[in-house]
Image (cartoon, rainbow, N blue to C red; front, side, top):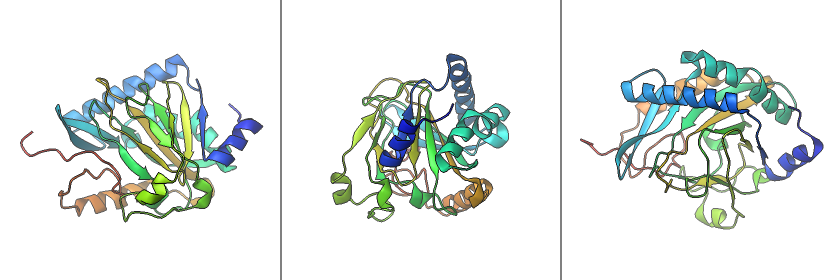
Amino acid sequence: MRLDDEQRAAWSRDGYLVLRGALDERRVAEVTAWVDEIEAWAATGGPGLHHFEQTDAGPAIARSEDLIGHHPGLRALLTEGLLVDLAGQLFGEPARLYKEKINYKQPGGGGFAPHQDAPAYRFVDHHVSVMVPVDPATVASGCLWVARGHDRGLLPRDGNKGLRPDVAAGLDWRPVELAPGDLMWFDSYAPHRSDTNTTDAGRRALYLTYNASSAGDFRTTYYEDKRAEFDDLDGEGETVRLSIADDFLGRPVEAGR
């Protein structure tokens, strides 16, 4: 797949780009089976890094990450072929995987405050990410909302919580609904947010982040740094920490639940 001039112009203008039907049904079914497999790992203490949140129905898996060392199929998808090639087209040079995660957003799963990814992605100044939906992402299920502003660099922040509320209120937010097979690319400076999943089905999606190869290979360093920082957290607070940034709005799992 080669990006055309119109798509490149949209990327440069908006900081995000939606490619409809980029993955065929066979690939979507394969990725869905892999996500089911990794979700089972989380329930049984399997490999990877897994995070949980509290919902009205009880504890639920919120995120799985650091996965490709344990799953050859996922590793191939993320580091060979279409996805890494498209990332390279957006950079204008070959791309390298920086991190990978699955956000599950189960029924009642929390959203994310308005934020930019760049402050949480250390060691490299610029990244691009792609959302690969496994389930339909709708307004009701907590799809991404995006706004222009990537060209302004880092916007004023509310500490480690995301964008300052007055800054977020001044942006023109637009929902991006996606179907399985679609791809949504976004710049690490593109402002985005999401809401709680109010449906009775999960809104699972892969989020894959790349950096330009010329910047270096920091995937192992990123996960070593994240695990070290999470080991120092005291586990207290009103929300769950999923990232180095504290922009997730999900509730901590209650003791004994």
